[in-house]
Amino acid sequence: MKVKILTFYIAVFFISAGAMSPALSGNVPRGWQQEFPKTDFSRSTIDFSEVLSGGPPRDGIPSIDNPQFRKASDITGLGENEPVIALSVNGEHKAYPLRILMWHEIANDEIGGVPVSVTYCPLCNAAVVFDRRVNGKILDFGVSGKLRHSDMIMYDRQTETWWQQFSGTGVIGKLAGTTLTALPSRTIPFRVFRAEHPESPVLAPNNARMRDYGRNPYVNYDNERNTPFLFRGDYDGPVPALAYVVAVGDKAFSLNFLREAGKLERDGLVITWQQGMNSAMDAPRINRGRDIGFVTVQRKNADGTLSDEVHDVTFAFAFKAFHPDGVIYTD
Image (cartoon, rainbow, N blue to C red):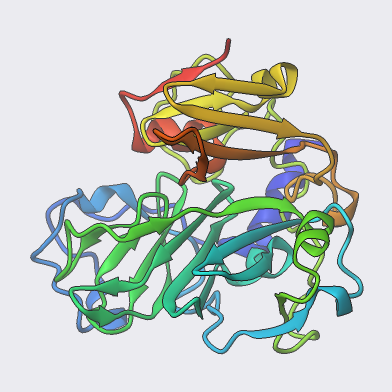
């Protein structure tokens, strides 16, 4: 598919006229204070010029605040190899299909007694889960409609602080400089979650007619010949900007390399690649996306046991944007 058609798909969903106009450095751009009256714009860790409008206004992409679930064994219509974010906390297991998060980007939930926000930014393919407790208070997160380095900026409804989704760090507002605690999760095929946890809850649409769940509005976006959308930074890496990498802190591993290796042990990490998961960013329907496989990332403990490690399967440009000194390993 030509880039022109790709841009059309993204534009229809994500941007409107003027969306690429940058904010003015040093001044609060017109409209921000009206849209976010509680945000303390005097507190910022970033330059306002780095923030772009994604098109939709605040909450134009609605977060899921009252999530509904169905038992995994009762789910129909979800492709066997479609990606879901699998989360396990204190013995409770839940799955959040990307076909739903593609259109909502944030689900505020609770699992195992822990309040969490399950987040997904399609333009970075960043799927990250956060504990939403800060300083003893529970925050609820929404989609601001703003982007930085092509990554979603979230906001909390209690203080209206703006948060970078990729890192979970507050960038503008009262809690600027605070970083949310990320929780280990896995992006795996639905069939794998169902086989392991057939009685566990899987996120279902509150209203199945609200969106065309299962459609990919970013057709062919993860073609490595393309360029990142709404990204103005410089990228200098050993793999294409839209190549998948497995990011663990300030280290990342090329997914193509992991596919060839099958299993990698390095710096206490054990990373295993398996085939059998659709790309969410490839075909018009997610369940027809090409097989990019999936990974488990674990850390070897002193006693030899393994525990899941916080990681993200994202695009190389996004990793380098937020870890400019980070290393991408290709062999």
